[in-house]
Structure formats: structure tokens, C-alpha cells
Image (cartoon, rainbow, N blue to C red; front, side, top):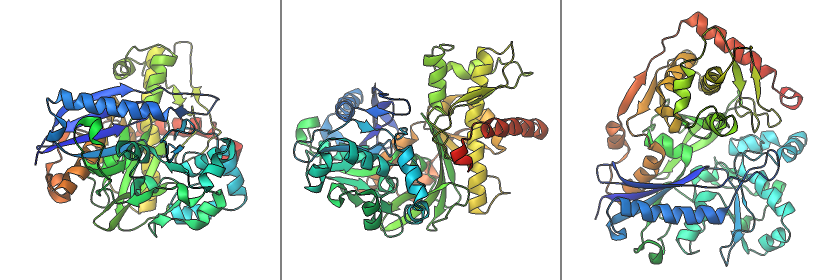
Length: 500
């Protein structure tokens, strides 16, 4: 067998395909941006058909870029933006509405109503999640309530629901397989992470027909074969994981206590807690890190909605940079005598605040504040938000005084200035992976290990390499002063609903 793996990485702003060779190195790649739709304030949608076509196109181009034919590929791994909800016709495979993106906040009122009815403890106990518009379950309920005829078709068994992985699996296999993996299922508000099954009680509360739901498989499993007509060979899909869990695996965070943080559109930190499901008292999420060989590994997760998206705002909204890579260079020129804070709550605040009503704000402006101060404030906001997650996780995990080495990846991790700021503000070392595409690598490892051509967990972890370690260098007094200013800024943004 060939040692090549095709990894499909379908993200919030683009679709990517990467070919990894037998040495787990990139041999070819392709990328295509996808359109973002904002029909109302706080609403975010994607065209599921566009996503599908972009995945096929980038996969073909990546195979060509590697100088390969489809028969040279052993298996496919898929990783995806999580929580984004898609519904489609079971027979035709046609989307029945635009996909509702994980960032979308249209179900905030529904979540508040469920909380008022006393349901949050029940949902949290069964799913490890909070009642927030972020998750797929209330998005699906909104679709059933607002798309003409959808509920009737769903109750007749004619509608499929899935996150992006399910949608791609269904399309790649010509409609033969309607499946997801345990990590994606654990982000829906519908899946019991203790029982490992869709929860009938929660489905009843949200009014969701069970027939809509995909089969849940392990992360390294048989997800069917791709239609030969698509790429020229009936390739097996052998690995699937949500993007953040895939990044944790790509960073070889297999042991309890290991932590990774991915900086893309948002920021997502996962702390491996092993076989122990750790319930959070600090509004973190309990989620499935992976399910392999019949064993479930759990994690604590903190989600920041806006990270790289704030840099995009500097570029596209304010026009003060032309490329995202310029943000760190500009931030380094900021006046050290000014302390501007930007709270990038463009679509609400994520963990540990969970305030969908909050909106972005700027504090500390002076007459001399300019582009450099804005760039520094945006990048510092990512570090402050990561610190918020780290403090909460350590309290939940019971290791508040222990140093945690943070393994990082994602587009923002390429910025030395940002990573040094992250180390300074969190007070912990930051290790940047030598392979930046760790999310795609994690999905590839699942497929490659399942196919028997890539190493298992232990050998894969031994092969993980650090590009650079960033160690804290700021004085503690300055660090604490900055953190106090951040907390004050955030406190002014918390809505009455979240505060109460």
C-alpha cells in the first residue's frame, strides 16, 4: 500500500486539502475560501453546496499538486468546523436551508427560555455543554420551526441532519453513509457523552425527530468509500474528528494534563482529562477528546469566539493592515505608555462568560491612539481570553498552581509577537508545533493509523516536534496591571442576563 493520506480540513472561512506522505510530511495542498453570509445581525450562514464543491475541487488539486493519482492515496481523513448545522433531503442530497454556522446567535432567546424552564443542569449533566446558541441542537430546532415543511419531511424520515463532517461523508459516499464521529456528536447538545448515544429525553425537549440523526462512530473507523467518479478511485474514509479534537491529536496531546490551543477564526483550548469526565464549576465545557479502540477520552474545553476574526476586522473592517501577517509587526510599534483594550465580542462572549448579548467595545483611547495601538490591543485580547480559559480549567482540573505548557497551532501561531504575548500574559511556556497544519495532521493520523500505515499513539507522540518555545519574559507587576485592566474592560461588557 501507498503511504499517502488525503486530509480534508473544512473550516469556517475556507476548505483545505492536504496530502501527507509516509513520513507524515506535507506532499501537496490546495485551499479555497468560502462565502460568509450575514442575513441579520448575529446571524452567520454558509452555502452547504458551495462547501461540498470546494472540498471536491481542493482535494483534486491537492492530489495533482503532490504529483499523484487517486490510486496512490491509501485513505482519507476529515476534520471540520464543529457545531455548524446542515439539513438536506435524504433522497436528492440537496440542502434544505443554508448551513447555520457555529458563530450564529439566532437561538439566544430559545436558550434563555430553556434555562428559565430549568433545563440547563439536565443538558449539562448529559452532554457536558451549556445552553448556548453556539451548539447545534437549538440551531436544528430553529430550522424545524422556521423552514416550511421541514418538520413534516423530517418526521417522515426524508431529512438528514448533520454537522459538516456528516454532510461531506454523505456526499462523498454518494448518499450511502449518514454518519458522524463521537467528537462531533458531543457538540450537538443531543448526545449523551456518558452513554455514548443520542439522548431520547433531550431530543424530546427540543422536538427533534431521531430519524434525522447520523450514526455515531469512533474517530478512527470505517466511514465508507468515496464514489470512484469523484477522484478516480473508491478511497476509504477512515478518520473523522471535529477540528479542535483533531488539532489536539495532531499536537499529540494524548495524556491527561496535556493542553493545546488553536488560533484560527476563534480560539479553542482543550485540556485532556483522560478517562475521567471532569465537570466544570467555572463554565468550561466537558467534551469528548476522542474515542478510539472502544475507549472514550474526555477533555475540558474553553471556546473563544473571536481570535483571528479580530485580525480580519483590522484588515477588512478598518483597513489598517493589508495582510493578517502584518498585525504583529504593527503591534510592536505601539506606544508602551498607552494601554488600549479591545473586547472583541462581535458575536457575544464565549467561555467563561457565555454572554451572547455582549458586543465589542474599545477602552482606554487617547488622542494619540492609532493603528499600532489597535493592532496591539487586538492581539493582546487573544492572550487575555486564553488566560481566562486557562485559569478556569486549572481550577476545574485541580492544578491551579502547576505550570502548564501550552501547545499551539493555527494561523495566528505563526506570529512570534503574538505567541510571546501569549506566554507573557498567561505566565506559561508556549510551544509552537513544527508542523503548523496540526488539525489536518490529526485527521490524517486517524486515517493513517486505522489503515495500518502510520504509527500508533505512543510512536506518533514521540515524533512530535517543537518549532519554538516562548517563555514568559514580562515583569509580574506589569502583567498583573494589564490583566486587571482587561478584567475591568470585560466587566463593563457583560450583559444583565449573563451577570444575573
